[in-house]
Length: 144
Ligand SMILES: O=C(CO)COP(=O)(O)O
Image 1 (tube, rainbow, N blue to C red):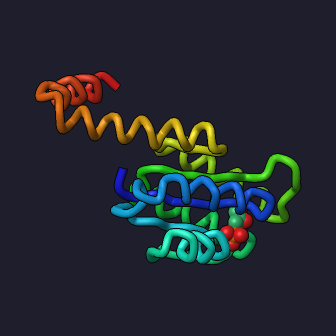
Image 2 (image 1 turned 60 degrees about the vertical axis):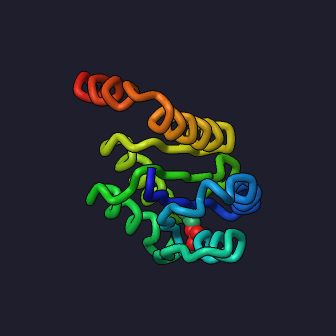
């Protein structure tokens, strides 16, 4: 879990910023990509560089989708707003679709995003502390 793409609609941006603040350590060694406005807010909040694409309505969702199709993204955090309509709704749908096509984890709310952070940290602990864990994980992967 090295490369993370983050996107939030206007009504969910504060939610995303509050959430990243609670996991600032987790993001310290990650490469972050984001749509324009989300990315500049994240950079200011985390105090680290974030690769910013165009704003969502101007094609940013599609740019992140292309990165996923190139298998450059390990995890998509997309806090989309279920209570407001978006002019670029087809792009939003296309981005989520590509994340499913390429089988990467997608978190659309804090509960799921927390779950994935905790799972990743647990996995790192296991990799460090349990000698047979890598063996187990490789066997599991080959069945998937
Ligand atoms: O609209 C968005 C995602 O669909 C987000 O775009 P911004 O991060 O530029 O606001």
